[in-house]
Length: 387
Ligand code: BGC
Image (spheres, rainbow, N blue to C red):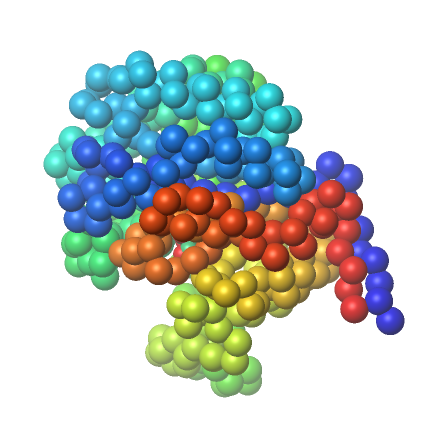
């Protein structure tokens, strides 16, 4: 029997992107000479058109990031043209009545910052705080939610421990320093933003991973799972729990942990990137976040699915489990699907297609995928039908 599942009033239905992945053409960032994105999805020039699509698809919220290297291309020197550009962009969203969530740092940095050792430098939190404060002063009247750092653990892992992303370091020592400096930066920004505007909303976008012991009753597997879960999912949040107005959750992954720390991935249904699709994981992650007693926004959740084969079910099933978490007392206030449009997927380039809207990279034409219409109905009605 099919059942209508209502979401809370004023629920935010949106999508998320990041500047480098959709804007491209940034010459002085730490990514541009290593993994150039060209024009990416050419959103820099087509943002009005893309915001019309957000509106057409009934979304009432949008998460984007400001590109630090555009705005502060040299240390302490701000580019007024780019500052005005983002203001125009925010005004274009406001005009369409779309709530704005801005990420201050989504993986990329100005070259001057990375030349000074990036986040390993003890001064890094000062540099980032100064930039953030400028953003607050410029856009505080327009932005509804601020996210300081996107996925601090993913970034520090890939850039400083496994060495896949700029600056390609492989050092546990640096990895720890980066995490620590991002914690310091987050706390400073939270304080300063609240001094400037006391009802401001500041959060983090935290990638939490659903871990399970490989054998449910094996004490060794359970122990490893506990330790890994603590470090990956809780450590950072525990450190900043008093400096959060909301938690942003990015949910993509599920793994089974076999002692000492082997990640066993199951591969029943996978995305184009081979990532397992495991909707119920989001329920357990959300229950785990309940103890922080804060509003939660799903700041990212999505999949690479060029042919749009799984996206509709993916959305429906994740929303079903989010609803169950709400029913069990978790204060989830919004869902931002990753992503609005196809974009540059970091070291994997343009092949993975995460967009509700397809981008033809030869001419930047947009084409709405069928799943986007499904999500548009949900965004309009504020419910899903569970068959
Ligand atoms: C990141 C995005 C990325 C997405 C898909 C998240 O980890 O915040 O930038 O495109 O996952 O991999």
